[in-house]
Every structure is written in structure tokens, then in C-alpha cells.
Image (cartoon, rainbow, N blue to C red; front, side, top):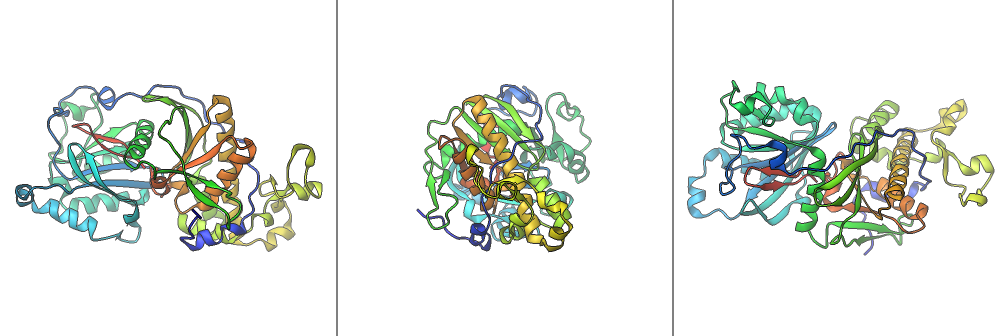
Length: 446
């Protein structure tokens, strides 16, 4: 099935030449570990309920990233008449507010096209809703939560990402109790904040792996896909990928930075590589070079630009192809290589600079992913994270690069929900959190 043109961005993808992936300059140190279950991570403590009990509504899960915060809300659709009658007005108001809006202020958004219906979560049936907002807007979110009465409800928010630690004091200042595990004073009942909303923190890499498994299990035959003929807009196809037998697989998680995980089986994975050059780098450099203010604006600029006005290509050095090593003349030999020329700098546009920045970051990520896959002898490579949201340019660059440089053995695999969570950082997909509510309820990082 042909790829649909859903935005101005996709219409302009064909204008961007697909270059080679570059060698990686940055390499994060490898950290090996086996993931633990949520019960093992948090230990047995006074905050754990029995497996037979269910936390009270509403149910939320948060992934607080360096650039974007992703919120998952579970809406029960199997309420009995008695439950509906006994439901407190605050919960009804929260549900109405979240469902009746697709935008919250200028920067908060609910992605209705990603919602998942008729899911079984914690012995309840309902719908998952996906909401995102810039992490820089966290103070406004906390004040909104307080104004809507969330802190007065006996409820639980499960959270992951670095922001679950960074914003702990901010949550407390607005009257939200943060529970951080058995070693935390709050777990021993020493919290001075007499409120009912608690924030349970979970390891984000555990959440990522289990979130992928959860989404694939609940969105079978529709979640994973790859691009066929990604360089040709006329023949490019979005093809479903069978992920029913997943292991082993590689996860390239592109958020503000990049982490690469090798998963060998359930609860058996390790972080094998990474780079500091990720979605945050692209946005930061784009803001610096072009004056743009948002990720969406940066992507729009990139879609209209031509990186050949910024990058030095193979043909700029050899006068054509480098046949001995099979390098075509349109491959990038030096990112930003033309910018040492005052004449070329005078002619370059904001769009060209954004385009070159996007291709530089994407090429670096693809190069590292390709080398790690070869080293680990893994043929399934999933690219996730909100860097890929509204970013078909990078998805198609990665698709071409993985296929070309592996001789057709590797495909870049993407997730439907990673375009937002994984999630609109990137972030995405979304996004980008498997959150265990106390009765083993799971809300997922997309």
C-alpha cells in the first residue's frame, strides 16, 4: 500500500537527497544489566496493594523526558450503572476535560488518532488516550492538575524518565506525594504532604522494552512496519512487519539523546551503546542556526531545504562516484563541509541549515545502529522515540541506510505509536511508559 501524504512535510520529503550514514563520533559507555520486574524493583512495602485490589480511578502513566512529557490516560468503558452513579464529580470533570479537547493551551495535545480502544487493563476494559506537552511546561501542568482536583483523589500516577526524579520537589510543592521506592523516607510514611496522589517511578529502559511488547501484543498485525523503496516517493510503500517472534531485537531509542538496547528475551536485555547526539541536539542546533522555536517548525524547515548547499558530497571531492567502494556521488562525505566557504555561507538558507542538521543527526544514529546490529548479530532493528514524530525524512533516511549498507539484510522497523510516544519528541510514538499500577495494571510508554 502506498505511503499516504498526510502533511506538507511528507510532500517535501522527495526534495531531500538520501545520503550515506556517517561514522559515529560520540559513543556512550556500555552498561549491561538484566531488567527486573516492577515488584522486584520497588520491593515489598506499605504502598503495595494486594493483587486482588484495584487502584481507584483515574489511571495515568507519565514519561517525563528531557524535551517532551507524554501522558497516557486510561478511560474505563465498562462502568456499571452503580459505578457511574457513585463516581465522584471530580473524576467526571477530569474525563470530560480530557476527552472534549484535543489541545490544552498552546502546547498540550491529545493525539486522538493513536487512541487504543477495548483494551483490558487491570481487569477493566477501556480506552488509552495519549497526551503530550513540552517538559518545560511542567509547572503549568502541575497547576492545572491541582486546579482540576487530581490531587484530592485517591489515585496513582506511574512515571518514568529522568523528569520523574528532576521534578520530584515540584510535585511536592503543589501538594502531590511522590513515592520513590522502599529506600525513600516517603515510603516509610514520613511525608509531610497529606494528599492522595502518588507518583510511582520506574526505570525508563524497563518501561521501554515492556511497552514495546505490550503495544505489539495489543495492536497485532498493525503496530510494526517498514518502508519499501524509501527513496522513491512514487513507489514507496509502508509494509506491515511481522513481530510475532521478536527475539532477539535491537531498540534504538531516539529521545533528547539516544540509547541502544539489545533484547534477547523477556526481562533479558542490556544497553549496548548510545550517543549524546539525538533529538534534543537537532532541535537545539536548529533553534541556534535558524531561529525556529519548536520541533515541528524545525522539521517543516528541513522538509523545504536542500542539504547539498551545506554538506560536502562525494562528487564534490571526486568529481563523481567513488566506484571502488561503491559510493555514489550524492553521498554525504562531510556534514556542513561547505560552510567553511564565505561565499556558500552567504547563499545558504534557514531551510538548508535545518535540512543538513536533520540529516547529520539521522546519519550518525543510523551508523551507530548498523554497527551495533552487526556486532550483536541481530537482524531486527526497531527505531523508536519522539524524534520520529512528524519526521518521515529521518524514517526514510534510516530505512534506506539500513537496507543499503547491510546488503538488504536489515530493515529499519518503526511503530505506529512511536510517531508520538516511544513515543512527539520524539517523543515518539510515541511515543515513548509501561507503568505497573499496584494491581499489575500496565500503561505503556509509546
